[in-house]
Image (cartoon, rainbow, N blue to C red):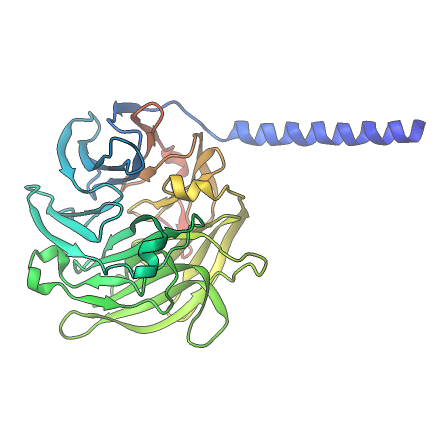
Length: 394
Protein backbone atom coordinates (compact mmCIF):
# COMPACT_ATOMS: atom_id res chain seq x y z
CA UNK A 1 0.00 0.00 0.00
CA UNK A 2 2.86 2.32 0.91
CA UNK A 3 4.65 1.58 -2.38
CA UNK A 4 1.45 2.32 -4.31
CA UNK A 5 1.07 5.67 -2.56
CA UNK A 6 4.68 6.49 -3.30
CA UNK A 7 4.17 5.65 -7.00
CA UNK A 8 1.08 7.87 -7.15
CA UNK A 9 3.03 10.69 -5.50
CA UNK A 10 5.84 10.37 -8.07
CA UNK A 11 3.36 10.40 -10.96
CA UNK A 12 1.62 13.51 -9.60
CA UNK A 13 4.96 15.23 -9.08
CA UNK A 14 6.00 14.45 -12.66
CA UNK A 15 2.73 15.84 -13.98
CA UNK A 16 3.17 19.04 -11.98
CA UNK A 17 6.69 19.44 -13.35
CA UNK A 18 5.41 18.89 -16.88
CA UNK A 19 2.68 21.51 -16.42
CA UNK A 20 5.23 23.96 -15.04
CA UNK A 21 7.56 23.41 -18.00
CA UNK A 22 4.73 23.89 -20.50
CA UNK A 23 3.66 27.07 -18.68
CA UNK A 24 7.18 28.47 -18.83
CA UNK A 25 7.39 27.71 -22.55
CA UNK A 26 4.08 29.44 -23.19
CA UNK A 27 5.09 32.43 -21.12
CA UNK A 28 8.20 32.84 -23.25
CA UNK A 29 6.06 33.27 -26.39
CA UNK A 30 5.06 36.92 -26.79
CA UNK A 31 1.30 37.53 -26.91
CA UNK A 32 0.89 41.31 -27.05
CA UNK A 33 -2.21 43.46 -27.18
CA UNK A 34 -3.29 44.69 -30.62
CA UNK A 35 -1.29 47.62 -31.97
CA UNK A 36 -4.54 49.00 -33.40
CA UNK A 37 -7.95 47.81 -34.56
CA UNK A 38 -10.97 48.91 -36.51
CA UNK A 39 -14.61 47.86 -36.68
CA UNK A 40 -15.85 45.31 -39.20
CA UNK A 41 -19.53 45.01 -40.05
CA UNK A 42 -19.79 41.22 -40.32
CA UNK A 43 -19.46 38.16 -38.10
CA UNK A 44 -19.29 35.84 -41.11
CA UNK A 45 -15.77 36.60 -42.39
CA UNK A 46 -14.31 33.90 -44.65
CA UNK A 47 -11.12 35.45 -45.98
CA UNK A 48 -8.94 38.51 -45.48
CA UNK A 49 -6.10 39.67 -47.73
CA UNK A 50 -3.63 42.55 -47.65
CA UNK A 51 -2.98 44.37 -50.90
CA UNK A 52 0.62 43.90 -52.15
CA UNK A 53 1.59 47.38 -50.87
CA UNK A 54 0.02 46.67 -47.45
CA UNK A 55 -2.14 49.82 -47.54
CA UNK A 56 -5.48 48.07 -48.04
CA UNK A 57 -7.18 45.05 -46.51
CA UNK A 58 -9.90 43.03 -48.25
CA UNK A 59 -12.44 41.35 -45.91
CA UNK A 60 -14.68 38.78 -47.64
CA UNK A 61 -17.92 37.74 -45.87
CA UNK A 62 -20.53 35.15 -46.83
CA UNK A 63 -23.30 34.47 -44.31
CA UNK A 64 -25.18 32.17 -46.71
CA UNK A 65 -26.50 30.01 -43.86
CA UNK A 66 -28.17 32.91 -42.02
CA UNK A 67 -31.69 34.30 -42.51
CA UNK A 68 -30.21 37.57 -43.69
CA UNK A 69 -27.68 36.49 -46.28
CA UNK A 70 -24.61 38.59 -46.94
CA UNK A 71 -22.17 38.10 -49.78
CA UNK A 72 -19.77 41.00 -50.03
CA UNK A 73 -16.16 42.05 -49.81
CA UNK A 74 -15.17 45.32 -48.17
CA UNK A 75 -11.90 47.06 -48.96
CA UNK A 76 -10.54 48.88 -45.90
CA UNK A 77 -7.78 51.43 -45.69
CA UNK A 78 -4.96 50.43 -43.33
CA UNK A 79 -4.55 51.44 -40.55
CA UNK A 80 -7.54 53.77 -40.02
CA UNK A 81 -10.23 51.32 -41.20
CA UNK A 82 -11.89 53.67 -43.68
CA UNK A 83 -14.10 51.72 -46.10
CA UNK A 84 -12.77 52.39 -49.58
CA UNK A 85 -15.21 50.19 -51.48
CA UNK A 86 -17.87 47.55 -50.89
CA UNK A 87 -18.09 44.87 -53.58
CA UNK A 88 -21.39 42.99 -53.87
CA UNK A 89 -21.84 39.34 -54.88
CA UNK A 90 -18.33 38.49 -53.68
CA UNK A 91 -17.78 36.95 -50.29
CA UNK A 92 -15.97 33.61 -49.93
CA UNK A 93 -12.46 33.93 -51.31
CA UNK A 94 -10.45 36.81 -52.73
CA UNK A 95 -6.98 37.80 -53.87
CA UNK A 96 -4.95 40.57 -55.49
CA UNK A 97 -2.76 40.38 -58.57
CA UNK A 98 0.99 40.65 -57.97
CA UNK A 99 1.04 44.36 -58.86
CA UNK A 100 -2.14 45.14 -56.89
CA UNK A 101 -3.91 46.48 -59.99
CA UNK A 102 -6.49 43.68 -60.21
CA UNK A 103 -8.72 42.14 -57.54
CA UNK A 104 -10.67 38.87 -57.84
CA UNK A 105 -13.37 37.48 -55.55
CA UNK A 106 -15.92 34.67 -55.48
CA UNK A 107 -18.99 33.78 -53.44
CA UNK A 108 -20.63 30.54 -52.21
CA UNK A 109 -23.05 28.52 -54.32
CA UNK A 110 -22.04 30.37 -57.44
CA UNK A 111 -19.91 29.45 -60.45
CA UNK A 112 -18.61 32.96 -61.13
CA UNK A 113 -15.41 34.75 -60.18
CA UNK A 114 -15.68 38.54 -60.30
CA UNK A 115 -12.67 40.58 -61.42
CA UNK A 116 -12.23 44.30 -60.67
CA UNK A 117 -9.82 47.02 -61.62
CA UNK A 118 -8.34 47.75 -58.17
CA UNK A 119 -7.44 51.32 -59.13
CA UNK A 120 -10.93 52.46 -60.18
CA UNK A 121 -12.96 49.56 -58.70
CA UNK A 122 -14.88 49.10 -61.92
CA UNK A 123 -15.77 45.47 -62.66
CA UNK A 124 -13.66 44.15 -65.55
CA UNK A 125 -15.50 40.91 -66.22
CA UNK A 126 -16.89 37.70 -64.71
CA UNK A 127 -15.18 34.33 -65.14
CA UNK A 128 -17.35 31.22 -65.00
CA UNK A 129 -16.36 28.00 -63.23
CA UNK A 130 -17.59 24.65 -64.59
CA UNK A 131 -21.13 23.69 -63.65
CA UNK A 132 -21.46 20.97 -61.03
CA UNK A 133 -22.62 17.56 -62.13
CA UNK A 134 -26.14 16.38 -61.28
CA UNK A 135 -24.72 14.15 -58.52
CA UNK A 136 -22.69 16.99 -57.05
CA UNK A 137 -25.72 19.32 -57.14
CA UNK A 138 -27.84 16.80 -55.19
CA UNK A 139 -25.14 16.44 -52.54
CA UNK A 140 -24.29 20.14 -52.41
CA UNK A 141 -24.24 21.64 -48.93
CA UNK A 142 -21.75 24.45 -49.40
CA UNK A 143 -19.96 25.28 -52.64
CA UNK A 144 -17.31 27.94 -52.87
CA UNK A 145 -13.97 28.76 -54.41
CA UNK A 146 -11.35 27.50 -51.99
CA UNK A 147 -8.43 29.45 -53.41
CA UNK A 148 -7.77 32.20 -55.94
CA UNK A 149 -4.22 33.05 -56.98
CA UNK A 150 -2.47 35.13 -59.64
CA UNK A 151 0.93 34.42 -61.13
CA UNK A 152 3.25 37.22 -62.25
CA UNK A 153 1.99 36.99 -65.84
CA UNK A 154 -1.55 37.83 -64.74
CA UNK A 155 -2.96 34.31 -65.10
CA UNK A 156 -5.67 33.58 -62.54
CA UNK A 157 -5.87 30.11 -60.94
CA UNK A 158 -8.93 28.77 -59.12
CA UNK A 159 -9.93 25.62 -57.25
CA UNK A 160 -13.59 24.94 -56.55
CA UNK A 161 -14.77 22.85 -53.60
CA UNK A 162 -18.01 21.51 -52.23
CA UNK A 163 -19.15 19.63 -49.13
CA UNK A 164 -21.07 16.43 -49.89
CA UNK A 165 -23.21 14.65 -47.29
CA UNK A 166 -21.69 16.84 -44.60
CA UNK A 167 -18.28 15.11 -44.75
CA UNK A 168 -16.37 17.91 -46.43
CA UNK A 169 -15.43 16.24 -49.72
CA UNK A 170 -13.71 18.66 -52.09
CA UNK A 171 -13.79 17.97 -55.83
CA UNK A 172 -12.88 19.68 -59.09
CA UNK A 173 -11.86 18.14 -62.40
CA UNK A 174 -8.52 19.91 -62.55
CA UNK A 175 -7.26 23.35 -61.58
CA UNK A 176 -8.71 25.96 -63.93
CA UNK A 177 -6.43 28.67 -65.28
CA UNK A 178 -7.64 31.77 -67.11
CA UNK A 179 -4.99 33.16 -69.42
CA UNK A 180 -4.52 36.89 -69.14
CA UNK A 181 -7.42 37.33 -66.71
CA UNK A 182 -5.75 40.44 -65.32
CA UNK A 183 -5.64 42.05 -68.75
CA UNK A 184 -9.38 42.61 -68.90
CA UNK A 185 -9.74 41.05 -72.36
CA UNK A 186 -12.75 38.74 -72.26
CA UNK A 187 -11.54 36.96 -75.40
CA UNK A 188 -8.32 36.02 -73.53
CA UNK A 189 -10.13 33.73 -71.09
CA UNK A 190 -8.95 30.16 -71.53
CA UNK A 191 -9.72 27.37 -69.04
CA UNK A 192 -6.93 24.79 -68.83
CA UNK A 193 -7.03 21.56 -66.81
CA UNK A 194 -3.78 21.04 -64.90
CA UNK A 195 -4.44 18.82 -61.86
CA UNK A 196 -3.91 15.07 -62.26
CA UNK A 197 -6.57 13.93 -59.76
CA UNK A 198 -10.17 15.01 -59.21
CA UNK A 199 -10.16 15.44 -55.41
CA UNK A 200 -8.53 18.85 -55.03
CA UNK A 201 -8.60 20.67 -51.72
CA UNK A 202 -6.22 23.62 -51.85
CA UNK A 203 -3.84 25.30 -54.26
CA UNK A 204 -0.91 27.72 -54.32
CA UNK A 205 1.00 29.35 -57.20
CA UNK A 206 4.54 30.72 -57.19
CA UNK A 207 6.63 32.26 -59.97
CA UNK A 208 10.25 31.17 -59.95
CA UNK A 209 12.50 34.19 -60.34
CA UNK A 210 15.17 34.22 -63.02
CA UNK A 211 13.39 31.66 -65.24
CA UNK A 212 11.19 33.19 -67.92
CA UNK A 213 7.77 31.62 -68.19
CA UNK A 214 8.27 29.17 -65.31
CA UNK A 215 5.95 28.79 -62.31
CA UNK A 216 5.32 26.21 -59.62
CA UNK A 217 1.82 25.06 -58.82
CA UNK A 218 1.12 23.17 -55.58
CA UNK A 219 -2.14 21.24 -55.21
CA UNK A 220 -3.33 19.29 -52.17
CA UNK A 221 -5.78 16.39 -52.23
CA UNK A 222 -8.12 14.95 -49.60
CA UNK A 223 -7.23 11.43 -50.78
CA UNK A 224 -3.86 10.14 -52.04
CA UNK A 225 -3.15 10.97 -55.67
CA UNK A 226 -0.91 8.71 -57.76
CA UNK A 227 1.44 11.06 -59.60
CA UNK A 228 3.25 9.79 -62.70
CA UNK A 229 2.21 6.26 -61.79
CA UNK A 230 4.12 6.34 -58.51
CA UNK A 231 3.15 6.08 -54.86
CA UNK A 232 0.15 8.13 -53.75
CA UNK A 233 0.81 11.58 -52.30
CA UNK A 234 -1.35 14.28 -50.71
CA UNK A 235 0.44 17.21 -52.39
CA UNK A 236 1.42 17.54 -56.03
CA UNK A 237 4.07 20.00 -57.25
CA UNK A 238 3.72 20.85 -60.94
CA UNK A 239 6.38 22.74 -62.88
CA UNK A 240 4.60 24.98 -65.40
CA UNK A 241 6.00 26.49 -68.56
CA UNK A 242 4.32 28.91 -70.92
CA UNK A 243 4.02 28.02 -74.59
CA UNK A 244 4.25 30.63 -77.33
CA UNK A 245 0.68 31.79 -76.77
CA UNK A 246 1.17 32.24 -73.02
CA UNK A 247 -0.82 29.12 -72.18
CA UNK A 248 0.52 27.38 -69.03
CA UNK A 249 1.46 23.73 -69.58
CA UNK A 250 2.81 21.12 -67.17
CA UNK A 251 6.44 20.31 -67.85
CA UNK A 252 6.82 17.84 -64.98
CA UNK A 253 5.19 16.93 -61.67
CA UNK A 254 6.11 15.15 -58.46
CA UNK A 255 4.56 14.42 -55.08
CA UNK A 256 5.33 15.32 -51.48
CA UNK A 257 3.65 14.60 -48.12
CA UNK A 258 2.94 10.88 -47.77
CA UNK A 259 -0.63 10.06 -46.62
CA UNK A 260 -1.63 8.56 -43.30
CA UNK A 261 -2.79 5.01 -44.15
CA UNK A 262 -5.21 5.01 -41.21
CA UNK A 263 -7.22 8.02 -42.43
CA UNK A 264 -9.83 7.84 -45.20
CA UNK A 265 -9.98 11.62 -45.77
CA UNK A 266 -7.07 13.94 -45.08
CA UNK A 267 -7.11 17.73 -45.00
CA UNK A 268 -3.89 19.47 -45.97
CA UNK A 269 -3.83 23.20 -46.67
CA UNK A 270 -0.77 24.71 -48.24
CA UNK A 271 0.99 27.80 -49.49
CA UNK A 272 4.29 28.47 -51.24
CA UNK A 273 6.66 31.35 -50.75
CA UNK A 274 6.36 33.74 -53.74
CA UNK A 275 9.77 32.63 -55.08
CA UNK A 276 8.69 28.97 -55.06
CA UNK A 277 11.55 27.85 -52.82
CA UNK A 278 9.49 26.67 -49.86
CA UNK A 279 6.14 24.95 -49.39
CA UNK A 280 4.30 25.27 -46.07
CA UNK A 281 1.63 22.66 -45.28
CA UNK A 282 -0.93 22.55 -42.46
CA UNK A 283 -2.61 19.20 -41.89
CA UNK A 284 -4.91 18.07 -39.10
CA UNK A 285 -1.92 16.53 -37.35
CA UNK A 286 1.11 18.66 -38.09
CA UNK A 287 2.72 21.78 -39.51
CA UNK A 288 5.59 21.22 -41.92
CA UNK A 289 7.90 23.03 -44.34
CA UNK A 290 9.38 21.59 -47.55
CA UNK A 291 12.30 22.89 -49.62
CA UNK A 292 11.25 22.58 -53.26
CA UNK A 293 13.42 21.64 -56.23
CA UNK A 294 12.61 20.93 -59.89
CA UNK A 295 12.24 17.19 -59.34
CA UNK A 296 11.64 16.65 -55.60
CA UNK A 297 10.88 18.28 -52.26
CA UNK A 298 12.80 17.85 -48.99
CA UNK A 299 11.12 18.06 -45.60
CA UNK A 300 13.12 20.63 -43.58
CA UNK A 301 10.81 21.16 -40.58
CA UNK A 302 7.80 19.51 -38.97
CA UNK A 303 6.06 19.70 -35.63
CA UNK A 304 3.03 17.82 -34.24
CA UNK A 305 0.05 20.20 -34.11
CA UNK A 306 -3.28 18.32 -33.72
CA UNK A 307 -6.26 20.37 -34.87
CA UNK A 308 -10.03 20.00 -34.85
CA UNK A 309 -11.32 19.49 -38.44
CA UNK A 310 -13.85 22.28 -37.82
CA UNK A 311 -10.98 24.77 -37.79
CA UNK A 312 -10.50 24.25 -41.52
CA UNK A 313 -14.17 24.79 -42.31
CA UNK A 314 -14.54 27.88 -40.15
CA UNK A 315 -11.40 29.86 -40.84
CA UNK A 316 -8.44 30.40 -43.08
CA UNK A 317 -5.85 27.93 -41.85
CA UNK A 318 -2.59 29.27 -43.30
CA UNK A 319 -0.90 32.37 -44.72
CA UNK A 320 2.60 33.45 -45.84
CA UNK A 321 3.99 36.98 -45.97
CA UNK A 322 4.68 38.33 -49.44
CA UNK A 323 8.40 38.61 -48.69
CA UNK A 324 8.38 34.90 -47.87
CA UNK A 325 10.04 34.92 -44.45
CA UNK A 326 7.07 34.19 -42.20
CA UNK A 327 4.10 31.82 -42.10
CA UNK A 328 1.00 32.04 -39.90
CA UNK A 329 -1.25 29.10 -39.09
CA UNK A 330 -4.03 28.18 -36.68
CA UNK A 331 -3.22 25.80 -33.84
CA UNK A 332 -6.07 24.83 -31.48
CA UNK A 333 -6.90 28.14 -29.75
CA UNK A 334 -3.79 29.89 -31.06
CA UNK A 335 -2.68 31.65 -34.21
CA UNK A 336 1.08 31.19 -34.50
CA UNK A 337 3.59 33.07 -36.63
CA UNK A 338 6.78 31.15 -37.44
CA UNK A 339 9.95 31.64 -39.41
CA UNK A 340 10.51 29.99 -42.77
CA UNK A 341 12.19 27.53 -43.03
CA UNK A 342 13.20 26.89 -39.41
CA UNK A 343 9.64 26.90 -38.02
CA UNK A 344 10.69 28.87 -34.94
CA UNK A 345 7.72 30.62 -33.31
CA UNK A 346 8.03 34.40 -33.16
CA UNK A 347 4.44 35.23 -32.15
CA UNK A 348 1.56 33.24 -30.65
CA UNK A 349 -1.86 34.71 -29.96
CA UNK A 350 -4.61 33.06 -27.96
CA UNK A 351 -7.41 33.49 -30.45
CA UNK A 352 -10.58 31.59 -31.28
CA UNK A 353 -10.69 30.25 -34.82
CA UNK A 354 -10.79 33.24 -37.15
CA UNK A 355 -9.46 34.32 -40.55
CA UNK A 356 -6.06 36.02 -40.46
CA UNK A 357 -3.47 37.50 -42.83
CA UNK A 358 0.18 38.54 -42.72
CA UNK A 359 1.14 41.93 -44.11
CA UNK A 360 3.38 41.82 -47.22
CA UNK A 361 6.50 42.89 -45.29
CA UNK A 362 5.81 40.52 -42.38
CA UNK A 363 5.48 43.31 -39.82
CA UNK A 364 1.76 42.82 -38.99
CA UNK A 365 -0.70 40.02 -38.35
CA UNK A 366 -4.34 40.95 -39.02
CA UNK A 367 -7.06 38.84 -37.35
CA UNK A 368 -10.79 39.14 -38.09
CA UNK A 369 -12.38 38.69 -34.65
CA UNK A 370 -15.90 37.57 -35.52
CA UNK A 371 -17.38 37.81 -32.03
CA UNK A 372 -16.24 41.41 -31.55
CA UNK A 373 -16.81 42.41 -35.20
CA UNK A 374 -13.35 43.91 -35.37
CA UNK A 375 -10.14 43.47 -37.29
CA UNK A 376 -7.19 43.37 -34.88
CA UNK A 377 -3.61 44.17 -35.93
CA UNK A 378 -0.64 42.76 -34.02
CA UNK A 379 2.95 43.84 -34.54
CA UNK A 380 5.42 41.03 -35.19
CA UNK A 381 8.70 41.57 -33.27
CA UNK A 382 11.18 42.73 -35.89
CA UNK A 383 14.28 41.55 -34.04
CA UNK A 384 13.11 37.97 -34.57
CA UNK A 385 12.33 38.26 -38.26
CA UNK A 386 15.93 37.91 -39.55
CA UNK A 387 16.28 34.45 -41.08
CA UNK A 388 18.97 32.59 -42.98
CA UNK A 389 17.97 31.13 -46.33
CA UNK A 390 20.31 29.04 -48.46
CA UNK A 391 23.05 29.75 -45.91
CA UNK A 392 22.91 33.51 -46.40
CA UNK A 393 21.54 35.91 -43.77
CA UNK A 394 18.97 38.25 -45.29
